[in-house]
Length: 133
Image 1 (cartoon, rainbow, N blue to C red):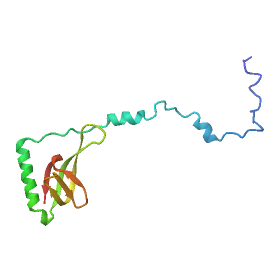
Image 2 (cartoon, helix red, strand yellow):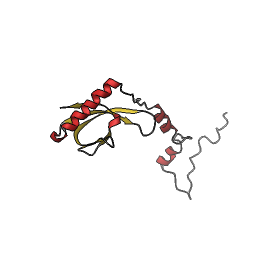
Image 3 (cartoon, rainbow, N blue to C red):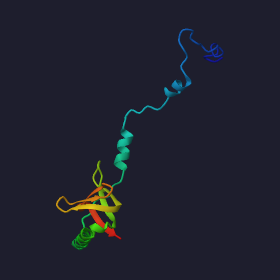
Image 4 (tube, rainbow, N blue to C red):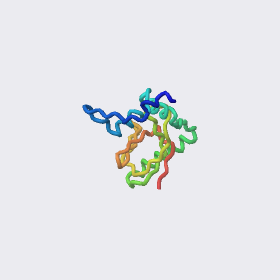
């Protein structure tokens, strides 16, 4: 004879005064508990890869300066331009190399800033290459 044989076949108790818990709430009480809230976000942020910005050598800087001068001279013709640009990451060291295409609205050599027709602003120091039509 088993330890619970005397109660195993009794009907399930239903309280006459308290409402029964909905099935969705019953399932939720057994869901996993996250003891460290935000821990997964921190781990995924740490694991996210970024590129390091590299410094151009003197020859590459001279070529880039010539391209800047040519672009400044042809600004009135509104050429289509593609910039290879280093965008610094806002949360950690490094960033990403991206390509930005469009028409240049203004070049400010004093602020070292290029403004595109769509309002995008690029720091000249973060431009790695320029391709024009």
